[in-house]
Each structure stands twice: as C-alpha cells, then as structure tokens.
Image 1 (cartoon, rainbow over the protein chains, first blue to last red):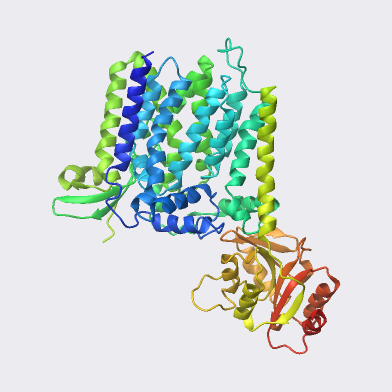
Image 2 (cartoon, rainbow over the protein chains, first blue to last red):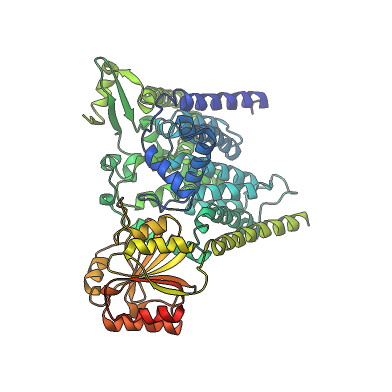
Length: 413
Length: 197
C-alpha cells in the first residue's frame, strides 16, 4: 500500500485534473448553450413547485440546486454551470475512493476508474452545462461509498441514506440500485469480520438509516410542490402518473431531432459512433461540439463487466459483485426502455461501468502488464483527443476530418 | 444504547419531514370565507373572481367542454384560463366534468391517449404535472375537501344542470365558490346563488 501522502497527492492531482478539464473556459460562452434555456425555465418553475413541458416528471432537486446556484451567482455562465463543474469534478475523486474502499489490496482499480472518468468526454461536456445526470451520479457514488464503509461497521449509513435520497431526487435512475446497496450492506462478509466491535448493519438499521432516510430526503425535496397544496397521498398518485406516462413515451414524444442519433442504450457500449455538431465552420480551423464517447473505454465496458462478474462468482468477491450489480441495476432499466435515449443518461451508468473496466484492466495487468498499460494509454489519449470536441474548441480540420467522417456529423447550415 | 437513541432521533426526523409536508400542503390550501354561487363574466371573469377571493391550492370541478389548460399567451379565454390558475397556484388538480352530449367524442379522444388511465367511470390524465380526471357528472367522485366549481351552463342539459344544482344544495359537492357563466335561462344555479346570499 502506498504511504498516505502519496495517495493524498494522487487524489489532489486527480481532483485538479478534473477541475481543470471542466472549468477551463466554461464561461467563454456567456449565453445559453445546450439545454440551458430549458433547464433555467425548469429551475424557475420547480422552485415554486410547478411543472413544465418535457420535465414535469423529473424529481426536483436538480432544478432546486440550479435555482440556488443562480440565486447566489446570477443567471450567468457560472451561476448556471458552477453546480455541475463542482459536482462533476468531485465525482472522479469519489469513484477513486470507492475503488480504494472496495479493492483495498489493489488501489490501482480506483486510480484507473477515477482517471477514466476525469477525462471522459461525455462527463466533461455535461459537467460544463446544466444537465441533471452529473449531479445524480455524484450523489449516487457518494451513497455507494458511504454504504461500503457502513458494511464494515462504520457509522456512515445515514450519510449513505442522505446521499441516496439526493441521488433519487436528482433523476429517477437509481431505485433498483438503491436495493442493491441495501443488499450489499446486509450481505455477510466472507471470512473473519474486519472489526468484531463494529458489526455490519442489521436489516432494521438498513431500512431505517438507508432507505427511509433516503425516502425522507426525497419527500423533503418536494416541499415547494407541497406548497401548492398537494398532500402525501397525491405524491403517491403523482408518481403512479409519472410511471404510466414514462412507459407510454416513444421517440415521437420528443421534439429533439438529434434523439435518434443517440441510439438506444444498448448501442452505447457496442457501437463506435457519436453525434458531432459543426458549431462554427472555418477555413482551416472549425469548432465542433461532440457528445463524445471514449471508445477504448466504452467498448470495453460490456466485456469487462462480464469478466468481473465471472471473477466475482469464482472468487465469491462481494466488491466485484457490487460493481457489476450496480452497473446492471442502473443500466438494465435504460435498456428496457426500448426506445432511443439521449446518451446523456449514460453518465448515470458511467462510474460503475468504468469501475468494472478498471477492475478488469487491473486483473489483466497481473498477466499482461504491457497490454493493460497500452490499452490505458490509448484510452487516456483518445479522451484527450476528444476533449476539444467535447468542449467546443476550435480544432484543425486536417487533424480531425478523417475521424469526423466516420461519426454522425450534423451541419446545421 | 447510543445506537437506540440515534435511531429514535432519525425516526423523529423522518416523521418530522412527513408532518412538515402535510402541514405545508394543508396550509397552502386557501378557501374563500362563506359560500357563494354567482355569475361570472365568462372564463376570464372566473379567473378574476378566484384571484379576488384569494383562493389557493384548490381542487377545481370544471364543468365545460375545453379543459382550459392551453398555454397560449394573450388574454384569458376558455382555452387557457385554467392553466393560468394552475400556474398561479390557485388550482392544483382538476375534475373536468363533460356533458353527456360531449362525452362520446371526449372518450374517443381519451381512449386514443396511451397515458390516459381509467378512473371510476372517467379517465385520469396529467398535464405538465397537473392531475386531471375527466368524467361525466354521474361519475364525479366525492371530494374530501371543499372544491371550486366553474360551470359553462350552456354546455349542460337541463337535467344535468338540475342534478349539479341538487348536489350542491345537498352538500354532496361542497364548495365555497361556485361561478357560472353562459346565457341559459332559467338556470337552476341562480336560485342557489340567491339562497347563499
């Protein structure tokens, strides 16, 4: 195990990298970008408990925090984007810490997963905007980290419940994963207990401190909505309405013309394609904006998840089982939607997808260290290659044209 | 023992959130003092009357052909005045009563909506988060709270209008403010208004 100072230094470096990639030039475009006009309207409406077209079914916390951020910093680029810059930059660090906690004997897993998320082009893009997924993923990874510590008898389950409540109240990605977290806290560890004085939580403790605390946080985020006269019974009816409406949605219900290009969730980790918009053409330098996918990492997700699942079964490894189970619990409901889904939703899956990839790479490094190192270098380099596209910077056409010719390139002219 | 105390404190905090939610909801529902049945100057007049009465967070029994949830800008009309009331927090849910004459066409439309669910003899739909139950007068569910009522008297048959007046008179439909508009005479809601005065 490296000495703590090296770990702290590495963590600081990871955080600095994540902050730099997300914050650099984030205010260059002072006007609205992406879905910001929509999200700002939603933030203003949700602050008074009101719903708006195309978002009324979303839980309110994301819009409430956006409203709080704009109240503090104004309706400018930082007021709108600071929330995601901060939470998006912290998420890779949390992923690394989660990796350390799960695989204490092999910290490399945490480092690789954290680094891949720090440079991930899609996560970078969304962290520089107002999308709900960044905040949702941050809170859910925080919840997972707290639960992993609680399973070892640490008093962090309430923290896990608070974070889980915030994740659930940010976007509806995690109901199944919340059950997985509870099951992990309850499942007995193989071998002797790491600390006999601190037993793992009981079922009653998990119900109260994780699930009921999360439910209470979730309900609390609806206080502006209750302020319109709705009662607790109506909150239940409202969620049944949300479920019914969501199940009846098809691609035709969305007005965004780019939705079909996002593909179904099943294509995210299988098809090497991405949507790129030609934002500002030039003579030799042009500005593109891509919903980038780091192909070396993303295409490794499904094989890695399968390999880690197999390894978990053979070794009866709870940490590996948790990573795969959380990945599946978030990803499978998106797969079952059966309609094109904006690739933004992949950000909710990404922390656990990349933990699986990192674990597989770490296992691979035990047998073929050069192959693992080469793959990791390729993944990091490809992410950096996509960075100018993910952040809408001007790039030389000669360098990027061969690559862009193979992608879904939209020219709005 | 400390664990027990902590669990008790957490349980209290959870209960406090639920109580706060319910208290917030109850406190947000503002009922007009007394009971009044009167004529309004069309849909825009209904909206003005609600604002003047200071009602908030209410269930609306809306007896008219259009549901009034259009988002079109401009002056309040029968197409958008209910949306204005929802937006301003005056109304939170809608029981939309459709006449027997209009019901077949409305029901065909609702049956074609994948997100519409059966509710009693009517249908439950949601408009930007606002729950709407579309029903005939005979299937109108009993409300557990006093409701606002607005009626386009020209859309109902004599029998339906008489039945609505009877429900209001008998108290099976409790309302602090019934507003009607239209040209029909005689109108059985008028004597109710005189009685309420």
